[in-house]
Image 1 (cartoon, rainbow, N blue to C red):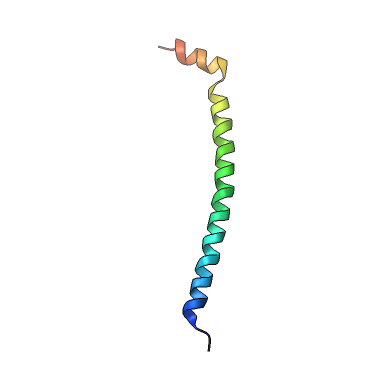
Image 2: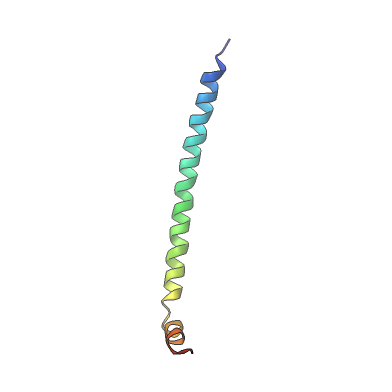
Length: 54
């Protein structure tokens, strides 16, 4: 009969690999969104508005 602890360790390793791979994809998407948001915040009209509003 198979030892269940080795099966659980294998499943835990697979889950860890999947989480790491998905986290990398999420970080890439997040980096793109942050870059787009930073670009939107550097809009000249918005900067002028923020400087001149009272």
